[in-house]
Length: 162
Image 1: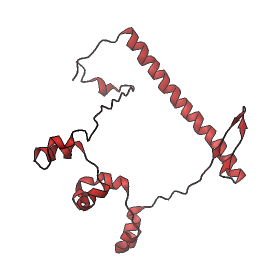
Image 2: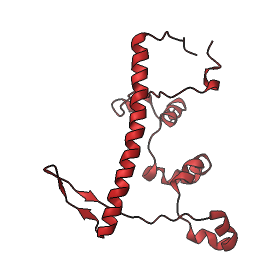
Image 3: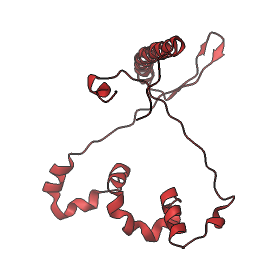
């Protein structure tokens, strides 16, 4: 674990302000959802997909869509339909991701169409001699994606701090 650093007054202020902003974002998101509901009811009542009001001298475009969403009880359908179940199925990206390791060999013939290089596969191909490291010069761009998450610690989160 990285060495614990002292909380300076400046960092305390930064973290405090960060938490205030997070709370405000949640409040604003809820207010925005509420306003959207009012506008959606209005658009639905008008029976139109587009509306072009002028508010405070600013031309606005309001677009409304209502997309039916169907959730199937897959287990019930599987039991009812038996062998016919496969005839109603389409690829599900979530399930593909969840089972990727199992189906990757089946996808191999299609990889030139659906695949992209991955760092692990590149390293493995270089290590096994399939490709030379030099072949990648100027053919990739490396960057560092930095992520910071600030949240309230739960009691168990702090147990491993010395």
